[in-house]
Image (cartoon, rainbow, N blue to C red; front, side, top):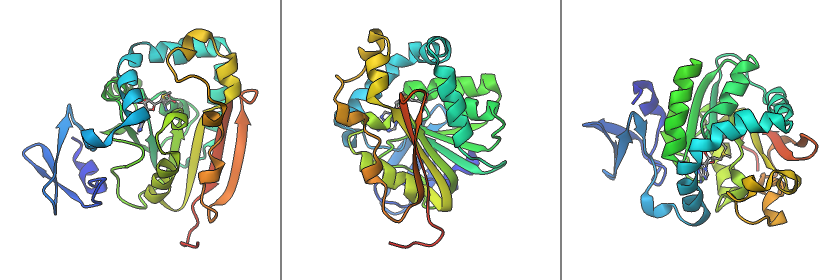
Length: 261
Ligand SMILES: C[S@@+](CC[C@H](N)C(=O)[O-])C[C@H]1O[C@@H](n2cnc3c(N)ncnc32)[C@H](O)[C@@H]1O
């Protein structure tokens, strides 16, 4: 594991700091132990990942074998390039900032940002080991430094107020608890940080090739609603951008500098 990662991590269930003991991460107070597999800390409890989170964790462990082909080869053929471009235009990143993507997948959105000149200190978290393993391979191939952690976006294993930018693309529609995932993004964001949440709308689900729909739950229009109702009222500059002929939503907002309710 990258040594500069340790001071940023916590036990996501206790909030306590972790220390390294014989290649295992240990909660400094309770002694709870977490493995590091292939250099990536695994910071979730197996029995806490249930329902849709468990379903999609398993599903992405095998979807990974076709994911990059779908996203990098098939998607541009049906106009998906426009979505990548709009995302990179909206997500504001300054050189050297600390940036976290929750649900980083195979890393293609970070590559998209870097390709658009957004050079930063990138961290990625995902619940699927398969996706992370591919992300690590991709990052090496693309020569992009991404520090990776396996965890649940509803219990993010990073300390409070670390990141200048926190973004999420493509997983939240199917999370068990969208509100908790958004609260966690806000918790790990610095005061004044920029936060972005993006996923597909029901329009995309209706228009995409039927084969893609096989991999996801049956369309329930409510699932694809932009989760604006979960953005706390004290967040600033909340904007819901509709991208790619309304096939994707991207919510952007800013955490206030001072904690005001
Ligand atoms: C459609 S992919 C998006 C990946 C990447 N952001 C992209 O745009 O290519 C959805 C990702 O969400 C991850 N995921 C699903 N449920 C999750 C959860 N509860 N916590 C963290 N990641 C999750 C999956 O493993 C998968 O990598």
